[in-house]
Image 1 (spheres, rainbow, N blue to C red):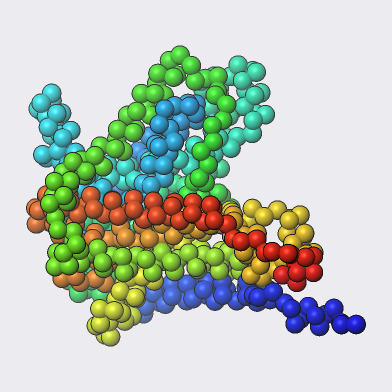
Image 2 (cartoon, rainbow, N blue to C red):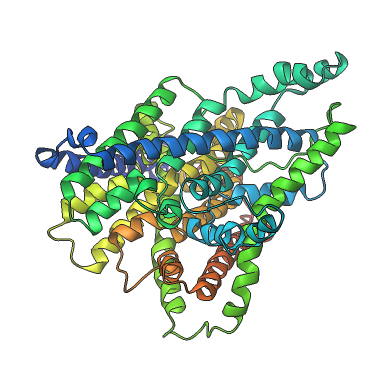
Length: 559
């Protein structure tokens, strides 16, 4: 009789050894930590050349630091004050027409290319913008200037208010139905309902969410570069870029990068130390909970007005890009390899596709390794490091480290791909982690008893749950890299721009028609990528894996 143990060893399922789940993710997590530590170490390596006293002796540097903090605080405050009533209105009106489309648009705000939206804001709120012209007719004394603090805060609110509102809405919808029924039976309305039901639901989410938004505003680069308007509106990221690319003052760049790292790192250390909820994306649930009793009468009118105004606020810049960009895009020879748009598209895709794919693979490996208690700390740290260390800070450190030998264009592009993949990691982690953990404990135990391990476990149990989130994650990773303007500005070449850099160059040389066409093409490219992801997952759902024929219990036992 054959020994069962020897039979198991000779018929072990592919990739079923625990090391296949632990080792790749652990190695990738360690590589991320090492790369980040190398970048920060390179900044510290410049320490002998640093002059910290310059921070308070130089009026320019004092202004840069104070303006960076001020504009981030103001952006967070206004975004939050706008997002909270919008989230409550959407929660009170679950059957509002077009609610699902608005939620999709709010989700896409994170991946929308910054430089494209800025061009749309210029078309609406700039000196010759649609809205500016109308307001000037009714209030000629109103002196509005988009450039400077006004434009920076406006752009930050455009990007971050939808993100905050979407996650707060998710928190409101997660309130237990029993509490909602009890509040309804007690007749709670208005402030009392806010105090008893809404605020307790939002409160645990807010610290991590505000830390995320503050970091995004604090490290904003493309918005400040295009709407800054001068030295008085310069942030740390822009000052670092100028010190590296124009002034060749590496010591100052390292000093500013360390200041930025210290502020962002302290904030996240405080939030993570408190163990607060740190959502960076909302879950894609479009549920329609039962209507609340406080959604009638004047509240319904107020909610409808607020939701419509918010939708118009989000759609106007995109509509302006479409209207301004369509004539230029329609007459452009898109398939001509000699056009700047074609070359920039190819270069953008060459960077974005590997970055997105790399981010997804790294995420899967990290999540798999994170199931082992011994590796949890390392994988958890690697997942959040890209939020703590801004991309331009990491890029500055690597730039200083490889400066003598960073000559070939391929080296710079490789660093751009790596950094873009790392920056997408926290967002993709959140998309993948939930579906991968959705396999309940009893199913896991049953699979263990049946010997469904390794590759077969992935194929039959995890893949059906993960194929759609993975496609969405890939689209997010590619989209974030496609719209990157910070890292590519540091390592890229002006003569061979990506789409965001080309758009920036066209805006800078007042080629507004060409800029609108480039912006519209970038948005269409994003829509194509997300549509392809949707179609691929739908095709995979229609053609599931072929079921094994004549499958016997013995076959399953060793799968």
